[in-house]
Image 1 (spheres, one colour):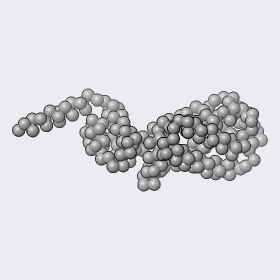
Image 2 (cartoon, one colour):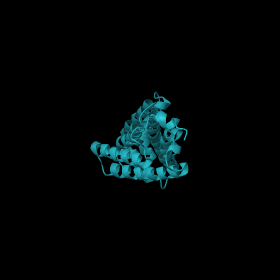
Image 3 (tube, rainbow, N blue to C red):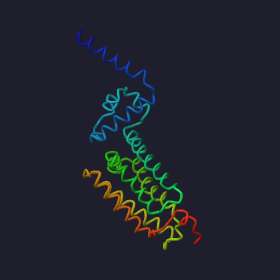
Image 4 (cartoon, rainbow, N blue to C red):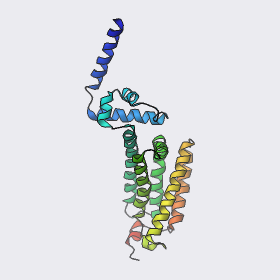
Length: 224
């Protein structure tokens, strides 16, 4: 009887703790629980019940927001990718900026995302082989980030066809992704990521044959 009395307040307390929270708060709590699991390397093995308990929500509440663990991870990945693309669009929108500086800024945003969210991005790489939704997100992100940057260049001013340049740029992007994954996975520190930024920036500048003086207005305004 004492056991029953001890257990009852716990169940009531759990319900009481969950009720005042808004839907947004519960969703954020689940995402934070998932983020903690990813950072701890336990996401693949943790159960939905354990994630719900960590977020202090019921199992039914978990399923109200996410259909599965895959959907939950996909949301985490989407959030990081949205942050990257927002920064890339900001870099691409700068008027009159030197293209070399623009490329360095764009590469820096990608590298910094890997430094800040290494566990989530590494998980995206590792789980994409068995999770189609993650694979689709990841493929679109790698290719899309390159296409967004190429939009700012006058491709006719470069000595290659548009299709050739895009194909080669996509190959470079996948190489960049692999190097960033390896660095993140090996525990690279901020200095190592800064060095990677410099190397990747030089790689892209060399690959795109960007001249020393290339204002965006001049490159985009070319009629060649």
